[in-house]
Length: 320
Image (cartoon, rainbow, N blue to C red; front, top):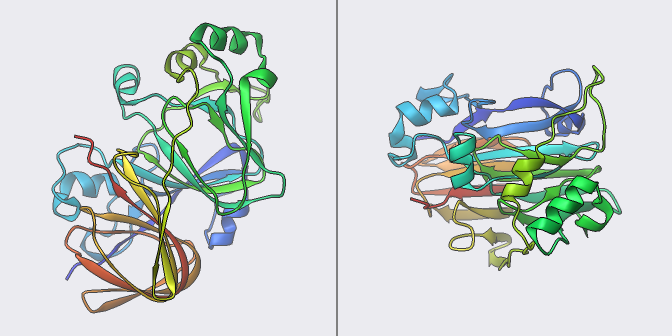
Protein backbone atom coordinates (compact mmCIF):
# COMPACT_ATOMS: atom_id res chain seq x y z
CA UNK A 1 0.00 0.00 0.00
CA UNK A 2 1.25 3.45 -0.93
CA UNK A 3 -0.04 6.61 0.66
CA UNK A 4 -0.13 10.25 -0.39
CA UNK A 5 3.05 12.15 0.47
CA UNK A 6 1.93 15.04 2.71
CA UNK A 7 4.29 18.02 2.76
CA UNK A 8 5.39 20.69 5.19
CA UNK A 9 5.76 23.95 3.22
CA UNK A 10 8.69 26.34 3.22
CA UNK A 11 7.86 30.04 3.82
CA UNK A 12 9.67 33.03 2.32
CA UNK A 13 9.56 36.61 3.57
CA UNK A 14 9.04 39.22 0.85
CA UNK A 15 9.04 43.02 0.82
CA UNK A 16 5.53 42.85 -0.69
CA UNK A 17 4.18 40.09 1.59
CA UNK A 18 1.73 40.13 4.48
CA UNK A 19 0.13 37.72 6.96
CA UNK A 20 -2.85 36.40 4.98
CA UNK A 21 -1.27 32.96 4.63
CA UNK A 22 -2.30 32.41 8.27
CA UNK A 23 -5.84 31.77 6.97
CA UNK A 24 -4.60 28.34 5.80
CA UNK A 25 -3.70 27.36 9.35
CA UNK A 26 0.05 27.83 8.89
CA UNK A 27 2.37 28.79 11.73
CA UNK A 28 4.16 31.57 9.88
CA UNK A 29 7.58 32.99 10.70
CA UNK A 30 7.72 36.62 11.86
CA UNK A 31 7.45 39.45 9.37
CA UNK A 32 6.01 39.93 5.91
CA UNK A 33 5.56 36.46 4.44
CA UNK A 34 4.92 36.60 0.72
CA UNK A 35 5.34 33.01 -0.41
CA UNK A 36 4.38 29.54 0.75
CA UNK A 37 6.51 27.06 -1.21
CA UNK A 38 3.97 24.32 -0.72
CA UNK A 39 5.17 21.54 -3.05
CA UNK A 40 8.82 22.34 -3.69
CA UNK A 41 11.91 20.36 -4.57
CA UNK A 42 13.88 23.54 -5.29
CA UNK A 43 17.05 23.88 -3.18
CA UNK A 44 16.18 27.50 -2.29
CA UNK A 45 13.14 26.28 -0.34
CA UNK A 46 12.40 22.56 -0.30
CA UNK A 47 9.24 21.16 1.27
CA UNK A 48 9.60 18.28 3.74
CA UNK A 49 7.65 15.00 3.59
CA UNK A 50 5.65 14.48 6.80
CA UNK A 51 4.46 10.87 6.64
CA UNK A 52 5.25 7.33 5.58
CA UNK A 53 8.63 5.73 4.81
CA UNK A 54 9.97 9.00 3.32
CA UNK A 55 9.08 11.11 6.37
CA UNK A 56 11.75 13.69 7.18
CA UNK A 57 13.19 13.77 3.67
CA UNK A 58 13.00 16.93 1.62
CA UNK A 59 11.19 16.56 -1.68
CA UNK A 60 14.38 17.03 -3.68
CA UNK A 61 16.06 14.27 -1.64
CA UNK A 62 13.15 11.90 -2.19
CA UNK A 63 13.02 12.67 -5.91
CA UNK A 64 16.74 11.88 -6.26
CA UNK A 65 16.78 8.78 -4.05
CA UNK A 66 13.30 7.26 -4.41
CA UNK A 67 12.43 7.47 -8.08
CA UNK A 68 9.89 4.65 -7.76
CA UNK A 69 7.46 7.18 -6.23
CA UNK A 70 7.79 9.49 -9.27
CA UNK A 71 7.74 7.13 -12.25
CA UNK A 72 11.52 6.61 -12.29
CA UNK A 73 12.21 10.04 -13.79
CA UNK A 74 15.23 10.66 -16.01
CA UNK A 75 15.53 14.40 -15.25
CA UNK A 76 17.56 15.25 -12.15
CA UNK A 77 15.34 17.95 -10.59
CA UNK A 78 11.73 17.81 -9.45
CA UNK A 79 10.19 19.75 -12.35
CA UNK A 80 7.31 21.64 -10.72
CA UNK A 81 6.84 24.10 -7.88
CA UNK A 82 3.49 24.93 -6.26
CA UNK A 83 3.29 28.20 -4.28
CA UNK A 84 0.69 30.35 -2.60
CA UNK A 85 1.50 34.05 -2.97
CA UNK A 86 0.07 36.80 -0.76
CA UNK A 87 0.51 40.15 -2.52
CA UNK A 88 -0.11 42.55 0.37
CA UNK A 89 1.73 45.05 -1.83
CA UNK A 90 2.51 44.91 -5.55
CA UNK A 91 5.24 42.60 -6.82
CA UNK A 92 7.96 43.92 -9.08
CA UNK A 93 7.30 44.09 -12.82
CA UNK A 94 9.22 41.07 -14.09
CA UNK A 95 9.82 38.49 -16.79
CA UNK A 96 11.22 34.95 -16.77
CA UNK A 97 13.53 33.18 -19.24
CA UNK A 98 12.80 30.02 -21.21
CA UNK A 99 14.69 26.77 -20.66
CA UNK A 100 17.45 27.50 -23.18
CA UNK A 101 18.32 30.97 -21.82
CA UNK A 102 18.05 29.84 -18.19
CA UNK A 103 20.28 26.82 -18.78
CA UNK A 104 22.98 28.99 -20.35
CA UNK A 105 22.84 31.94 -17.97
CA UNK A 106 21.36 30.63 -14.70
CA UNK A 107 22.09 26.87 -14.78
CA UNK A 108 18.52 25.94 -13.94
CA UNK A 109 15.12 25.48 -15.57
CA UNK A 110 13.27 28.27 -17.31
CA UNK A 111 10.07 29.55 -15.77
CA UNK A 112 6.65 29.24 -17.29
CA UNK A 113 3.98 29.65 -14.61
CA UNK A 114 0.26 30.11 -14.08
CA UNK A 115 -2.03 31.51 -11.42
CA UNK A 116 -5.33 30.44 -9.96
CA UNK A 117 -6.72 33.53 -8.23
CA UNK A 118 -7.74 32.53 -4.69
CA UNK A 119 -8.90 36.05 -3.85
CA UNK A 120 -8.72 39.51 -5.37
CA UNK A 121 -9.92 42.73 -3.81
CA UNK A 122 -12.40 44.80 -5.85
CA UNK A 123 -10.60 46.75 -8.58
CA UNK A 124 -7.59 44.40 -8.64
CA UNK A 125 -5.50 44.16 -11.80
CA UNK A 126 -2.40 42.46 -13.15
CA UNK A 127 0.43 43.68 -15.28
CA UNK A 128 0.17 41.23 -18.17
CA UNK A 129 2.04 41.86 -21.41
CA UNK A 130 3.26 45.07 -23.01
CA UNK A 131 2.63 47.45 -25.91
CA UNK A 132 6.06 47.58 -27.58
CA UNK A 133 6.04 46.55 -31.25
CA UNK A 134 9.79 45.90 -31.62
CA UNK A 135 12.68 44.99 -29.31
CA UNK A 136 14.24 48.40 -29.99
CA UNK A 137 11.02 50.08 -28.86
CA UNK A 138 10.90 47.82 -25.79
CA UNK A 139 14.50 48.74 -24.89
CA UNK A 140 13.83 52.45 -25.38
CA UNK A 141 10.67 52.44 -23.22
CA UNK A 142 12.32 50.44 -20.43
CA UNK A 143 15.39 52.68 -20.36
CA UNK A 144 13.17 55.77 -20.33
CA UNK A 145 11.02 54.33 -17.54
CA UNK A 146 7.91 54.89 -19.66
CA UNK A 147 5.90 52.33 -17.72
CA UNK A 148 2.57 54.04 -18.34
CA UNK A 149 2.79 53.43 -22.09
CA UNK A 150 4.73 50.15 -22.01
CA UNK A 151 2.81 48.03 -19.52
CA UNK A 152 -0.58 46.45 -20.12
CA UNK A 153 -3.04 46.33 -17.22
CA UNK A 154 -5.65 43.57 -17.07
CA UNK A 155 -8.45 43.38 -14.46
CA UNK A 156 -8.62 40.18 -12.40
CA UNK A 157 -11.12 38.66 -9.99
CA UNK A 158 -11.44 35.72 -7.62
CA UNK A 159 -11.60 32.41 -9.51
CA UNK A 160 -9.73 33.58 -12.62
CA UNK A 161 -6.95 31.51 -14.19
CA UNK A 162 -3.97 33.20 -15.84
CA UNK A 163 -1.24 31.47 -17.87
CA UNK A 164 2.14 33.23 -17.86
CA UNK A 165 4.60 31.75 -20.38
CA UNK A 166 8.30 32.55 -20.22
CA UNK A 167 8.94 35.85 -21.98
CA UNK A 168 5.68 37.44 -20.76
CA UNK A 169 6.12 40.68 -18.76
CA UNK A 170 3.89 40.41 -15.70
CA UNK A 171 3.23 41.39 -12.09
CA UNK A 172 0.76 40.55 -9.37
CA UNK A 173 -0.55 43.74 -7.83
CA UNK A 174 -1.61 44.39 -4.27
CA UNK A 175 -4.73 42.79 -2.88
CA UNK A 176 -4.35 39.51 -4.81
CA UNK A 177 -3.67 36.00 -3.52
CA UNK A 178 -2.91 33.19 -5.96
CA UNK A 179 -1.92 29.58 -6.11
CA UNK A 180 0.95 29.45 -8.57
CA UNK A 181 1.96 26.37 -10.54
CA UNK A 182 5.34 26.81 -12.22
CA UNK A 183 8.46 25.16 -13.46
CA UNK A 184 10.87 24.64 -10.58
CA UNK A 185 12.96 27.77 -11.05
CA UNK A 186 13.87 30.72 -8.86
CA UNK A 187 15.02 32.98 -11.71
CA UNK A 188 13.24 36.32 -11.93
CA UNK A 189 14.35 39.32 -14.00
CA UNK A 190 13.01 42.61 -12.61
CA UNK A 191 12.28 45.52 -14.94
CA UNK A 192 10.80 47.87 -12.36
CA UNK A 193 10.31 47.78 -8.59
CA UNK A 194 8.57 51.10 -7.87
CA UNK A 195 11.88 52.51 -6.51
CA UNK A 196 11.04 51.02 -3.12
CA UNK A 197 13.65 50.10 -0.52
CA UNK A 198 14.03 47.28 2.01
CA UNK A 199 14.42 47.66 5.79
CA UNK A 200 18.07 48.65 5.27
CA UNK A 201 17.18 51.34 2.73
CA UNK A 202 18.47 49.34 -0.24
CA UNK A 203 16.67 49.05 -3.57
CA UNK A 204 16.33 45.55 -4.98
CA UNK A 205 18.45 44.63 -7.97
CA UNK A 206 17.05 45.19 -11.47
CA UNK A 207 17.94 43.05 -14.49
CA UNK A 208 17.29 45.29 -17.50
CA UNK A 209 19.59 43.59 -20.02
CA UNK A 210 18.26 40.13 -19.24
CA UNK A 211 14.68 41.40 -19.31
CA UNK A 212 15.15 42.91 -22.76
CA UNK A 213 16.86 39.72 -23.95
CA UNK A 214 14.09 37.33 -22.91
CA UNK A 215 10.86 39.32 -23.38
CA UNK A 216 8.62 38.11 -26.19
CA UNK A 217 8.10 40.93 -28.72
CA UNK A 218 5.42 41.69 -29.69
CA UNK A 219 3.49 40.43 -26.67
CA UNK A 220 1.19 37.50 -27.46
CA UNK A 221 -1.63 36.31 -25.19
CA UNK A 222 -1.92 32.52 -24.79
CA UNK A 223 -5.13 30.98 -26.14
CA UNK A 224 -6.69 28.96 -23.33
CA UNK A 225 -9.29 26.24 -23.85
CA UNK A 226 -10.74 25.78 -20.36
CA UNK A 227 -13.04 22.77 -20.01
CA UNK A 228 -15.55 21.92 -17.25
CA UNK A 229 -16.77 18.37 -16.60
CA UNK A 230 -19.61 17.59 -14.19
CA UNK A 231 -19.07 14.37 -12.24
CA UNK A 232 -22.04 13.74 -9.96
CA UNK A 233 -22.37 16.87 -7.82
CA UNK A 234 -18.66 17.68 -8.28
CA UNK A 235 -16.90 19.54 -11.09
CA UNK A 236 -13.50 18.96 -12.67
CA UNK A 237 -12.08 21.94 -14.57
CA UNK A 238 -9.11 21.53 -16.91
CA UNK A 239 -7.29 24.86 -17.13
CA UNK A 240 -4.28 23.89 -19.26
CA UNK A 241 -2.76 20.73 -20.66
CA UNK A 242 -0.45 19.66 -23.48
CA UNK A 243 0.26 20.66 -26.17
CA UNK A 244 -0.68 24.23 -25.20
CA UNK A 245 1.15 23.86 -21.89
CA UNK A 246 4.19 21.57 -22.33
CA UNK A 247 5.46 21.84 -18.76
CA UNK A 248 2.37 21.05 -16.68
CA UNK A 249 -1.35 20.36 -16.71
CA UNK A 250 -3.49 22.15 -14.11
CA UNK A 251 -6.94 21.20 -12.83
CA UNK A 252 -9.52 22.39 -10.32
CA UNK A 253 -11.45 19.75 -8.40
CA UNK A 254 -14.61 21.19 -6.83
CA UNK A 255 -15.58 18.30 -4.58
CA UNK A 256 -19.19 18.24 -3.42
CA UNK A 257 -19.96 14.80 -2.03
CA UNK A 258 -17.92 12.04 -3.67
CA UNK A 259 -15.48 12.20 -6.59
CA UNK A 260 -13.56 9.24 -8.08
CA UNK A 261 -10.42 10.04 -10.10
CA UNK A 262 -7.76 8.04 -11.91
CA UNK A 263 -4.18 9.01 -12.62
CA UNK A 264 -3.23 10.67 -15.91
CA UNK A 265 0.50 11.11 -15.23
CA UNK A 266 3.28 9.48 -13.17
CA UNK A 267 2.31 11.55 -10.12
CA UNK A 268 -0.11 14.32 -9.14
CA UNK A 269 0.42 17.46 -7.01
CA UNK A 270 -2.59 18.42 -4.89
CA UNK A 271 -3.40 21.57 -2.85
CA UNK A 272 -6.57 21.99 -0.76
CA UNK A 273 -7.56 25.67 -0.94
CA UNK A 274 -10.82 25.51 0.98
CA UNK A 275 -13.11 23.14 2.83
CA UNK A 276 -12.48 19.72 4.35
CA UNK A 277 -12.98 16.07 3.54
CA UNK A 278 -11.06 12.86 2.91
CA UNK A 279 -9.01 11.04 0.31
CA UNK A 280 -9.21 7.25 0.18
CA UNK A 281 -6.23 5.41 -1.31
CA UNK A 282 -6.08 1.62 -1.43
CA UNK A 283 -8.70 1.36 1.31
CA UNK A 284 -6.93 3.79 3.65
CA UNK A 285 -8.69 7.05 4.53
CA UNK A 286 -6.77 10.29 5.09
CA UNK A 287 -8.36 13.48 6.43
CA UNK A 288 -7.94 16.63 4.32
CA UNK A 289 -8.35 20.27 5.28
CA UNK A 290 -7.71 23.74 3.90
CA UNK A 291 -3.97 24.33 3.57
CA UNK A 292 -2.97 20.70 2.99
CA UNK A 293 -0.55 19.90 0.16
CA UNK A 294 0.46 16.43 -0.97
CA UNK A 295 1.67 14.30 -3.87
CA UNK A 296 -0.16 11.22 -5.12
CA UNK A 297 2.75 8.95 -6.14
CA UNK A 298 3.18 6.60 -9.10
CA UNK A 299 1.99 3.49 -7.28
CA UNK A 300 -1.53 4.92 -6.86
CA UNK A 301 -3.74 4.31 -9.90
CA UNK A 302 -6.98 5.81 -8.58
CA UNK A 303 -8.42 7.53 -5.52
CA UNK A 304 -11.67 8.73 -4.01
CA UNK A 305 -12.37 12.16 -2.57
CA UNK A 306 -15.31 13.01 -0.36
CA UNK A 307 -16.50 16.09 1.48
CA UNK A 308 -16.75 19.69 0.34
CA UNK A 309 -13.41 20.98 -0.93
CA UNK A 310 -11.88 23.31 -3.49
CA UNK A 311 -8.65 21.78 -4.79
CA UNK A 312 -6.02 22.73 -7.38
CA UNK A 313 -4.07 19.79 -8.81
CA UNK A 314 -1.28 19.57 -11.36
CA UNK A 315 0.75 16.96 -13.20
CA UNK A 316 4.16 17.24 -14.87
CA UNK A 317 4.40 17.71 -18.62
CA UNK A 318 6.29 15.52 -21.05
CA UNK A 319 9.00 17.86 -22.29
CA UNK A 320 11.82 15.43 -23.05
